[in-house]
Image (cartoon, rainbow, N blue to C red; front, side, top):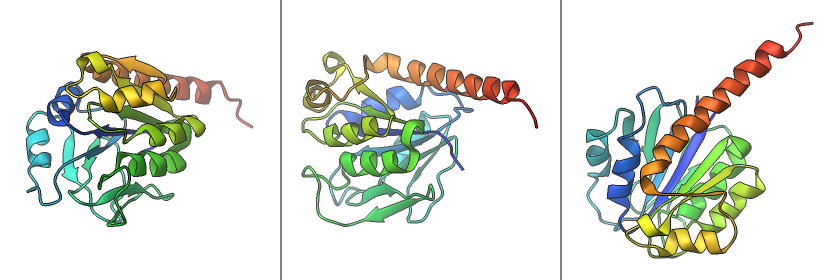
Length: 203
């Protein structure tokens, strides 16, 4: 079961941005990735296949009650909200649209924040609406880390710019730097965990 999670939200222009990030992550990436990409309700499921071609991690469309595992990429199905449960499993919902979207980035970010707290990194990519800003606010409230794509490198600037203007972004990175930052971030986290364990006196 994954102890660290990256939740990614993308809309207009998201496919290329996701390919850029996922293709740069190693096969032993020590976290799970949960992705909401806005798409049409009747969209044929080719997203997992397309992303899987350029990714060393396992890519799959999420199903209800699926356990979140390290080194796996889980995609929200078209027309379903993707939620994270307290037992670190996934669930799907056809509740009303949030921020005019289903799947909603806010729904993923908010539920992931409640489940994972400081062990969650949220990443908000290109998009032409405001989905994700409220979710970032919840991630920060739960002591997680929030990263927005530099709007100057985004096909659609509105979504990352909204979160930046709301003051809920910890880091603004160009698209090409996001994967590298995630790799180094989790390497530091793992190193810190090992050091803490080794320095803890045994009773």
